[in-house]
Length: 308
Ligand code: R5P
Image (cartoon, rainbow, N blue to C red):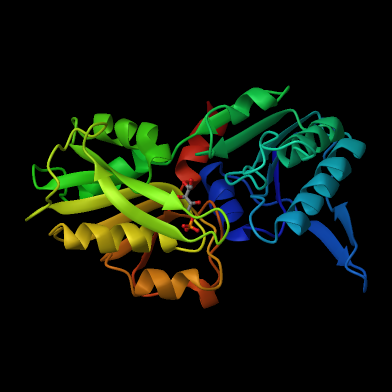
């Protein structure tokens, strides 16, 4: 078996390689002055099962192109089987036509990676559970929820004083799964409204009906917010402000994909959260790291999946 990586998250690729007891197979990437890339595999991959690690996080387009070129290079050089580990998959927002005249960006990316010769995809916490149905090749949709449950237990937070919070109604399934993994820890949902014209997010209320925590007060309670991704940081920040007004105690956030915009680190550092836990599905460069940030790794889970 051979494992190669694009440039989007080499740290994660090294950790996955270690889990598998492999060295990364070197690639040569030449970037022309106009930005075009040329990829060359510097090892024999003939008849090998190959793993490509490349989350398509920002810069999304560059990372997709790099992935396409790597898959093509492996295929052309005789790889037998190609598994793409794309823990974060870009273009998930456009997974269907919302309005007449629109493209379906995600289907374009899927068609490209499939037609180039990828045989299997491993990914994490997709925005919608319907997305795997768009693939024609096998896809393993893993979740960071068990890793979060483990961290919550390790921190000794699995007692009656803790309530799980979904910062919007779209996260209800995610929060139910985490609740089940933590002996039915109570949960509540924030009602988030987004102004479609300005994009501004407002945490308007807590919905008691679809929650197992029925009170609109969190006095003396530790709150754990859970989401699939952070982009601008406003969803978490606004939820934190609302929950503080409802007497919340210490608050923590667990999020799979740290797609931080340039403003997100400051917003999150100044938020009401004690800590923000993210996975290493997306590489967080030094300039986007901040004191409250904690990173847990998905490498072991990916390694176990490949070995199985
Ligand atoms: C929305 O449906 C997602 O689950 C996240 O809540 C959202 O993408 C977070 O974005 P931001 O950090 O920009 O508020």
